[in-house]
Image: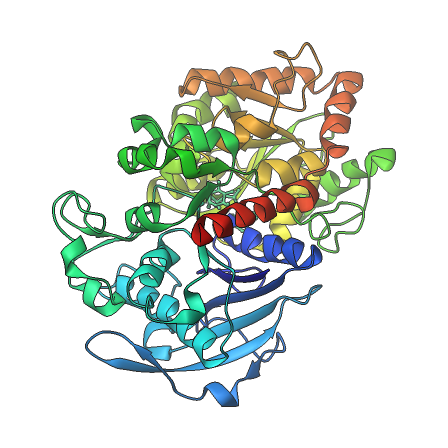
Length: 486
Ligand code: ADP
Ligand code: GLC
C-alpha cells in the first residue's frame, strides 16, 4: 500500500512528546511490512536539515499551495528516515514555521497547519503519487479527511484514498474561527450549529477529523473506551459515540532499538536482565553526575514528562513534602511545562537539596539516563492516551508507579492485585492519597530483592515492539480502503 503519513512532529528531527516517537517508529514498522510510506511534516527553523542529510528539492521549487485567498509558494526538502526506506518531505515555509517553538498561540496557528496539510496534497499531486491511505495524527492534520472529501474531491489521485485519523490526545483539538474554512478549501454550507464542520461555535479541526475520517484510531484500547465518556472525551464524546463503530484502540509500540538498555549509547553502562546488577552502576553514576549522595539502598524515583495537568502532577503537590520529609527516597525530575509544576520541583530541590534534582528543560540523553538509573518511575496521569515512558521504564527494569488510565492501564499490572505477578504499581482513584500509598508500596517492596527482580523481569522480558501492532494498523488500513471503495 502507498501510505501518506502526516504529522506535526517526528523524532529525531523535532519532538515535544510521544507523537514524535510514534511518527518515526510506526512508519518504520509499516515499511518493514512492505508498504511504501511517505511522511509529510513542517520544516521548523530548529531542524538542521543538512546535518540530517536532507536534500533540497529542485523540482518542487516554490510549489504553489492554495490557501483560499492567496497561494503560498513553499519549498520542500526530502530525505529518508534513518534505519528505513521511509521517505520524508519537509514543508519549508519560513513565515509560518520559523518561530521560537513548534506550537504557538499566535493568531495564525490554525493557518500554519492548514498549510502543512494542503502542502502534503500539493506534493502528492506534483509527483502524481496516489496514496491508498492518508494517515493523519491529532488536530494539526485532522482536516485532511474533510479536505479529501471537498477541496480535493475533483482529483482522481485521491478518489480511492482512505483516510485514517489517529487521536494521540483529545485534550488538544485546534479550535478556530470559521473564516479558516475558506483557507482549508472547505464548504461553508457544512458549517452550521451542529453541522459536521461546526462545534460549539467554532471550527474545530479534531472534530472535523472525527466526522470525516473513514477510520478513527486511538493509541490504546482503554483510551478508546474512555474517550466515549464525558470524563475523558473533552467534549468530543458525542461525535465519537456516533462514530463508535469506526473507533479502534491500538496500543503504541516502542522503538526497541532506540530504547534498549543493552545497546543504548546514552546511558553509562549497558545491561540486560541477565546482567541487571549493572543497572546499579547507572544509578550510582547518575546520582554522582547530579551531585546527590550515592546510597544504593535508597530508592531513586524518576520523572520524565511534559509538566502539564494531564500528567497528574497536581496529585504530587500535597504529597511531595511528607514523602521527602518522612521517607528515605530521592527524586530526579526532567521536564518542562506549566509554571506551577515547575515551581513545585524547583521548591523541592531547594527544600531537599540532598534528595531532589530538578532539570527543568529538555534532554534526550538525561531521559535515557533516568530510565536506566532510577528504581521507580512516576506517571500519575489524569489521563494518558498511551504513554511511552512507562514502556521505556519496563524495558529498563525501572518499576512504574502509574494511575490506572488509558495506555497505563493496558501496560502496567499492579504487583499486589496480581498476587505478585505484576510488573509495577498502579492506583485507580485520582487522589493524592492513592498516589502516596502506591509510592510507599513500591518503596516498601524495594529492599526485597527477590520480589523486585521478579517485577523487573516481568517488564524486561515483555515485547513492546511494533511487531504485533503494526499488523493491526495494516488490517485497519485494509478495512478503511474497503470502506472507501464500497
Ligand atoms: P506525551 O506524548 O503525552 O508527552 P509520552 O509518554 O507518550 O507522553 O511521550 C513522552 C516522550 O517525550 C517520551 O519519549 C519522553 O522521554 C519524552 N520527553 C518528555 N519530556 C522530556 C524532556 N523534558 N526531555 C526529554 N525527553 C522528554
Ligand atoms: C500523546 C499522548 C501520549 C501518547 C502519545 C503518542 O502525546 O499524551 O499518551 O503516548 O501521544 O501516541
